[in-house]
Amino acid sequence: MPDKLAWIEEQLKELREQGLYNTIRTIGSAQGAWLVVDGRRVLNFCSNNYLGLANHPVLQEAAIRAIASYGVGPAAVRSIAGTLDLHRQLEERLAHFKGAEATIAFQSGFNANLATIPALVGKEDVIFSDELNHASIIDGCRLSGGRIIRYAHNDAADLERQIAQASGYKRAIIVTDGVFSMDGDIAPLPAICEVAERHNLILMVDDAHGEGVLGRGGRGIVDHFGLHGRVDVEVGTLSKAFGVVGGYVAGKSTIVEWLRQRGRPFLFSSAVPAADTAACIAAVDVLERSTELVDRLWENTRTFKTEMKRLGFDTGRSETPITPVMLGEAHVAQTFSRRLFEEGLFAMAIAYPTVPKGKARIRVMVSATHSHDDLDLALSLFAKVGKEMGVI
Ligand SMILES: Cc1ncc(COP(=O)(O)O)c(C=O)c1O
Image (cartoon, rainbow, N blue to C red; front, side, top):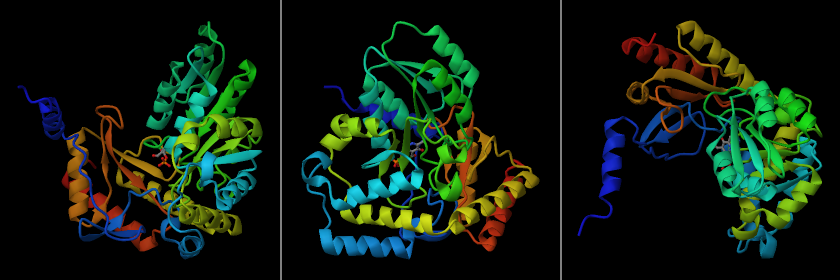
């Protein structure tokens, strides 16, 4: 009998040969500017812990207190016996923080997209989707069964053209990332919003990398552009700048109410545990109390980006703390990342299929936790490896 798994072995071999095999590194410490990775203490430049909340004492304490009161497991899905008063509090606090009519919390940002898109569109409908949208949006679109029409990246004029050419559908939605996770550029939301309003289409933005980063005190992309009340659905994550885990949808109360009835991960997958929910509420407390962490994040971002450009690196079209260091071929990016690691700096290579072929890069994530010394050390190591490899 032939080996029914032989094709997988062949694919894995090919990935290794092409430098596209994902090496999973193991973290042996709390998140922060410095980490223990595969047993070594290294300077961390690749977590989504933008504000350092993943190991913040206020969040830790809230989580510990919640475990003492509520235990560890949710024991049910939200719609049966899994909705705690903490979930309700978190949803109210997030709605207030975002200036939105209502919010609904999910287990992750990925789940929030999987819940929302199929709840809003189906087989007879159309989704206008930016060609570089995140995988969770793409999967949500596929799951809906709707016709997916891609428009050119961040191009509101092409979006308008695609809408004009499409016909024979019942309902339609426009969906875009707010901050694009691999390039760090920002969607032109005011222009997209105008298109949506002209055609009376639902507008949905995934602000996973804008939460805690853009807008006043980290209130996100809608706040950044002053578009309150004009974006129907804002998907957020609590797993990046918020430092914990979870996702949510903020927007019109009618949509939030509908997602409580038809958002499948809300109905069919267990709730986020009390400890994480309490830690998320504490994250909102920290963000509402002061803009200090968000301000520091942007100060570090400006310093790092300016100096990387001065050294001669190509940092693409980023406008946010996500800083791609463009290197081209996957094997170059992997070798660069490995050399940085040998020098004590943790910054992962990203290659196809996460980014297009030939556009491999090191994706640097700047954080509020980095000190001036950390930034100086990182810049000197990038310069060292960059010169050694002939990149600069
Ligand atoms: C744009 C975007 N949306 C959604 C997600 C998923 O968020 P979560 O990690 O909370 O599932 C990510 C995470 O990488 C993301 O970058």
